[in-house]
Picture 1 (cartoon, helix red, strand yellow):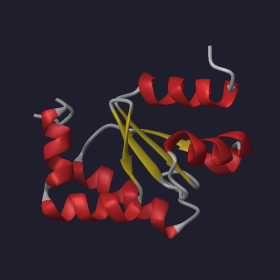
Picture 2 (cartoon, helix red, strand yellow):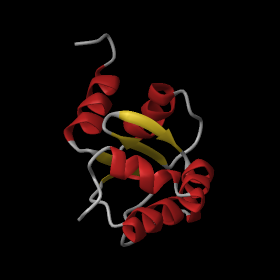
Picture 3 (tube, one colour):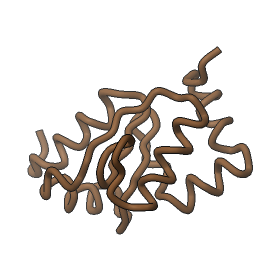
Length: 110
């Protein structure tokens, strides 16, 4: 265990599922436009993903920013690796890079 129990929880979350989105709200009821966009992109691509609503846990809300060294939410993780926030995910989706990442990771539905 590390010195930081919040980091331990985050690491558990990002390694438990292949695709993890830390967002404000839920995919059904997003609480910010950026979270909504990333959630919709993932749903459109058709990949299974787990979400964590940072508005329900202030430790995670603050901790995820330090964990990834990324200042904003939402944050997307694939196979335990930080991929990016809304702008990066949107750009990757539009270029096809996101779909390729999921395909290369064996996460695309056949």
